[in-house]
Length: 158
Image (cartoon, rainbow, N blue to C red; front, side, top):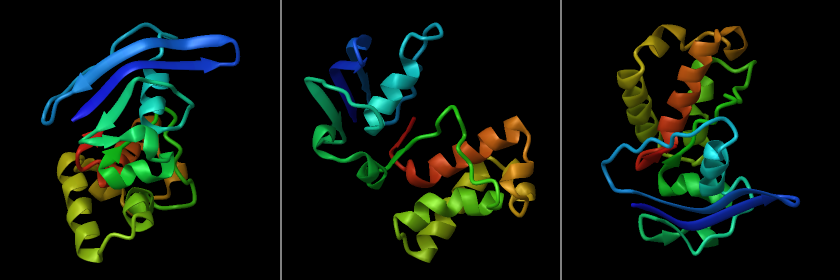
């Protein structure tokens, strides 16, 4: 489903990723493990198109990601829960979670179905749905970020 072959990322003269190769078969869980500064987050950001990367192959579900702009990758079914949550503080938990589906202009029935799936995976969010994101603890915020990623990530969750 996901193939990355020979990925490289540099920030200025500093090479961050060198020849990263990985594959994630459909239905599998894969852990990217390494010490701080090893390039785990940069690898995920490269897959999402958030940092400039070169690679011999960046492919997801038969689509060449090198031809897909970053803002279109969620339409392919890729969800991304960044380490730095990036929640909208004035929005409720539910509004934060629903945002990707609304941006994708999904039908209301599909949005409701996906939201129920998020609540099935993260039932703690049901009681927090009306709370403003600014009032959440760190752990609660991470759950909301994961729930938001699940709204778009129907095929792959990073």
